[in-house]
Length: 114
Length: 113
Image (cartoon, rainbow over all chains, first blue to last red; front, side, top):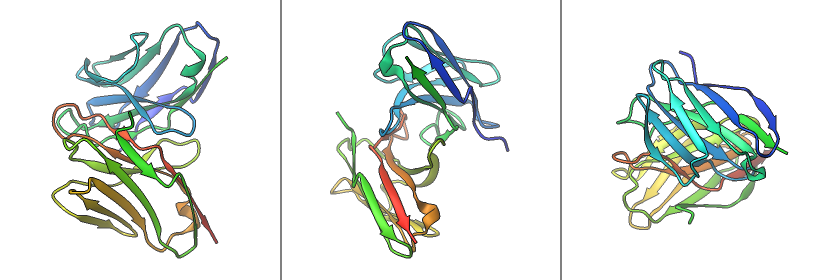
């Protein structure tokens, strides 16, 4: 069974640029959630996708957007990057929407905005 | 507003000792309470979880104690080992409706030999 994978591992961007982060869910899982983890903090929920539709969103501005593909992989896009966007971005997958409280995390993508 | 409050921020325990981490929540709609373990440079790993219909759940050296009336829950690590040194996060969620996880701020555990 393949776990959650994310790419890239690390990324450095300049303020104002755009970034796309990618996630492949665990085998058999169709629900994906994205979190932002600032240094020394707990993860903060960005949004969740189920069957290619957004299924809940946290307190993040519209410049944070996402996609889920038919194979259940997902992308997180962030436009107009700000310095405060520097964080570890985590993807978590769940078996399905009904059990999406049980989440399994990938290793994360470390984004640095300069 | 922090939905889940976690303490202590850091904890140092001797090898073989008991590590105790505490969490409190306000939202009575929460009905799923997991604990995650995170090593540096890694994503959080689901360790153990409890639902409010039981007061305690044990898996190996890890035990969750749950007090529904006090809206508190805690993680006990028995016979703590240096390999347990990591950051531990409690979280809470609702099993129906919006079921994103609300995380505590984390406890950095160091187990010294």
